[in-house]
Image (cartoon, rainbow, N blue to C red; front, side, top):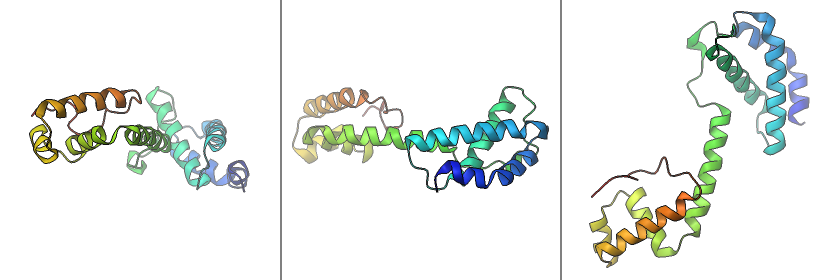
Length: 166
């Protein structure tokens, strides 16, 4: 069963959920419709394991986005909000991580090893130089080149120790 069929089958349940979360239940149908559109669009891009659960999270996202814009779609109880990341955030993270891992795997072996030891293992440049029998300048060169190569994928924001100095 695809996402559209699953959502159609559970439309009443999703609508009831959305109505309970809104101050103005009249907007529930609009939010449910927007939820359907977003879920079906995402299903076209990537298979969704649990479309109904995903739809509930998307509905929450729409409700909260509306409340940030000052609309009357503010949730009744903020404690009901889930602290987990939104599905769109999880998907974005997974896609960025996949691009980063692919780019990292494409680096020359020595460059990749130096980068991993520095930014993932947290070793200093001096420790890496000693371990690998390289000069400190060679380690710096490999780190700079790795950062340049990896910056093409634009996903270095979360790299541990990216701007740290030894």
